[in-house]
Image 1 (tube, rainbow, N blue to C red):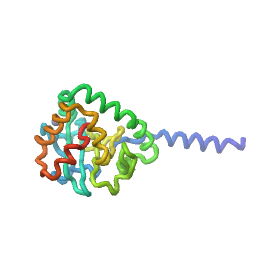
Image 2 (cartoon, rainbow, N blue to C red):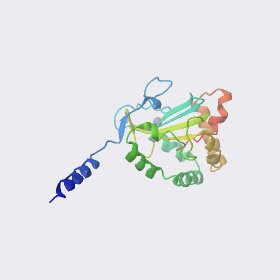
Image 3 (cartoon, rainbow, N blue to C red):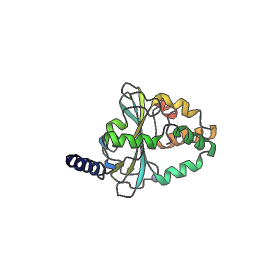
Image 4 (cartoon, rainbow, N blue to C red):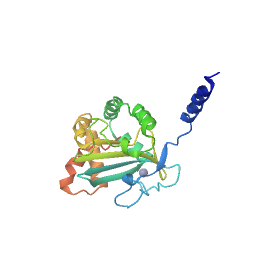
Length: 203
Ligand SMILES: [Zn+2]
């Protein structure tokens, strides 16, 4: 009898834990477009409009010493077109390389501990585990739908230094294709090309 109030409280807490937590938020400022001075309104590649619900796309922003040096939003159609151009072996190697970092499991535990507070999701390099703060170069990635950022394993951060390891996984054909993509889409000043061209731009 005396246990009952406690039991009821446990039941109550359990119900609270299962309350629905939405896994999306309006796109936070850190993922806004530097050039558009707000959310990305269109796919950087095909100009498809993005801000309606039901338009999924990826955002990649690269920073060098705190400044945006590279950014794009890519609709999933463009992404799959691009992946078709890459060699199957390269894709396979990247996928199994990324598999060892258990992006989905990491997402689940971040969601449990921090919910949709974007800070902890991008505070450390996914691969090295080191804090992003203090890194010269780093990359942020997010998956979005319309005007929302979706928590689905992303968002995440990579430090600039991890790119060499990723580069080694790419075939020459794939590397050339990615470099070509960067040259076509982004007229980067030559001094910035090297870090970016080495960057892990395909996720
Ligand atoms: Zn597109």
